[in-house]
Length: 261
Image (cartoon, rainbow, N blue to C red; front, side, top):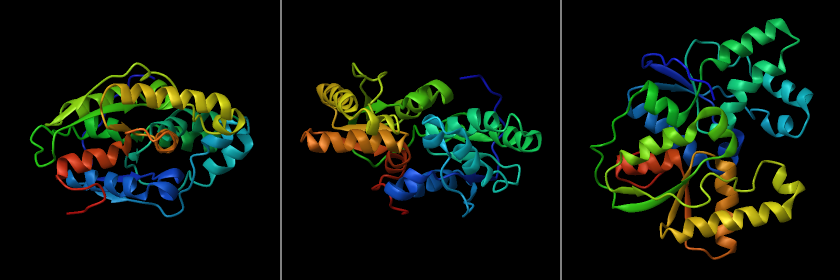
């Protein structure tokens, strides 16, 4: 992860919703929009967007990943920030899209310019909008643990952003667990290719989270949430999972995630 200079708060932004949120957790995408609109922003959602290309890229198929990225380079034409409610997808767009076009100068310039406008949601809320949630009231007190995907931690610094936002929320106690810095075992196609290893890793993750006594795990990456949440249900463990966007909206809005009012 590299340090970056943050712009002043804009009036308009793009949302890159990610394919996993679109297919499995659309409420998290809606709650991300609500968090941004709460700060007075107009949110634009280009309908042609799809996957960031990370599954193909991490599986050793750069040509397929390049084709996915190329189909979207012109969708975010205005000089507005591109906010991504996924640290791993934001990392793919910010750090790897320019690399995919290293031998294509025209598209490399487009990818590099776009990459400079890509922000993970927590990062954007904290450093660009400088949100202040200390006055949020209405939701009951609760203990939570955090999980940060490997890519989000390394490439976007998502953990530090999430910690800062959660720690500022009234009534929320964040508890660290022994396996917080470890992979949950999802790793995209890793979970398919090495199912036994993946299963053992997520079992350790769930056990460590439950050992804290917290009943909720919060993360900014849907792939990890699907993996941890399904494992917890399979193990009949007392652990609910929630996307960071929905968690923040629920806490600052005082209502259930997915509720606009």
